[in-house]
Image (cartoon, one colour):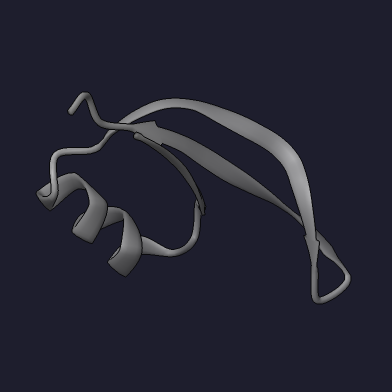
Length: 47
């Protein structure tokens, strides 16, 4: 199972880690939010 999450969303990152997801990489400047480019973490969990 895979997901992406914005790097500044610490509550979500901690929740995903608690559920067994691990960071696999970073997508640099992948989203344009509020007139700023934002990085995302790619996370995955083996089922």
